[in-house]
Amino acid sequence: MEDIEQILLDAAEAMDKAYAYIRASLAKIRAGRALPDMVEGILLYYHGSTVPISQMASVSTPDARTLSIKPWESSCLGDIEAAITHSQLGLTPHNDGETIRIHVPPLTEERRKVFSKQAKTEAEKSRVTVRNIRKEGKELLNKLKKQGISTDSIRQAEAQLQTLTDRNIQQVDQLLADKEAEIMVV
View 1 (tube, rainbow, N blue to C red):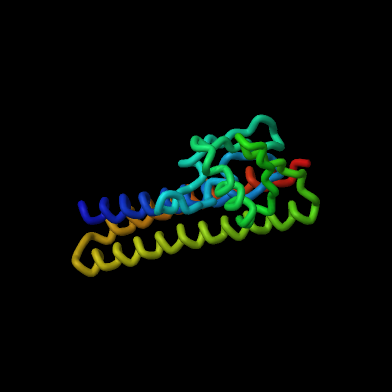
View 2: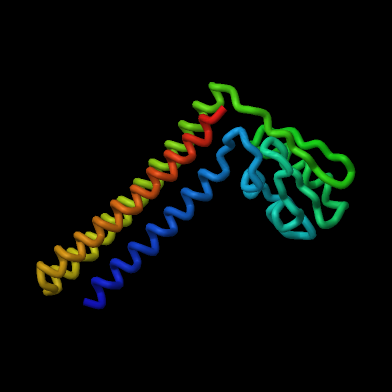
């Protein structure tokens, strides 16, 4: 029975990680609003190591369309500006000597569709990951069945595994619906 519980616990943990990953992935997709998460994945070389902007500067949103980045060391201003310019965000930073401001333009209908499609792709990857975790869990349960664990215990564990899978896929679907609504707001 401990083996069954461990399999279910491992599956739940892996599915939680998949959900955390999709949340982070969807947060990085532009929705026409300025969000500090937009620059989270941008890395730059600083004092011999690669660090994200959030560890070098304060990132805030003074209004819905502006992102403000204030480095803790003014010597980093140019490096941060260059990293944003070379990133795949497609945004232009404006350096005033102390702060970098990024104006996030409203999205065109075409861009909204592209970002919506990107969100759907990310969500589908997450669903596939969750289903693969379920498949691995079922395979492990079948191995236990061959070792002599009762069929009823295995069926009950499979039902719990399916419930976990359904819950996680539902969470991903809700996250996708929220992101699509956010993207499509004009």
